[in-house]
Amino acid sequence: MNEVKLNLGCAGRLLEGYINIDQDSIETMKIRYPDIKFKETDIIYNYDVFNLPFEDNNVDEVIADAFIEHLSFSEEKLIFEEIKRVLKPGGKFNFSVPNFEKNIKMWLDAEDDWKEFFRSDDEAINQQHWFGTYTYEPKNRWGYLTAMIFGTQNGEGQLHKNCYTIPKIKAILNKLNFSQIEISEFRWKENRDFMIQVNAIK
Image 1: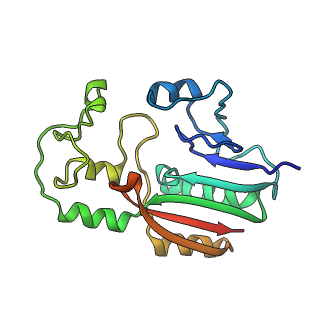
Image 2 (image 1 turned 135 degrees about the horizontal axis):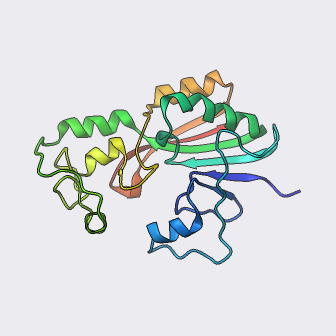
Image 3 (image 1 turned 180 degrees about the horizontal axis):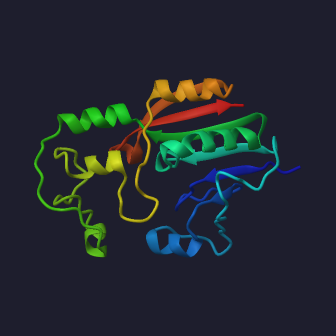
């Protein structure tokens, strides 16, 4: 029997062999990520992530990279409980979120040098404009560092509505009785947001 594997909040990161799920369609992703070569057979399912169309204990793996922070505090309990519901005993839950503590420390250490109101027009997005800066370099608080904390805000669903630290994640997963919790850290695209990587087993 084929494994059932879900990729929640996939955006442009579609995975082979997974059911890729996002609020946006494949057509929207092709416009948002013009540099990504999508296959003709690629499909994005617009399932309700709080009410996934899978029976209890039916899913082998759930991946949710840079997704859960886009859900609100009130939705946090719903998403974690829904993922636990669909996973089989022994099923894998692998996800990543920004490391709020480390990103905030970086923001506090940067220069408070505001230059311009945030822009979300096409030209600004294409030129990597962040509050008057045109770089991912973290010298200025009001450059990309602000997006690390609050999300890019260039489109619907891209805001960060919640935050995570390693102790919080451990507490959530322990409360839900996940086992074999492994946590590591990395940098998004190697030089941007500090991220937390979590691998847990139900």
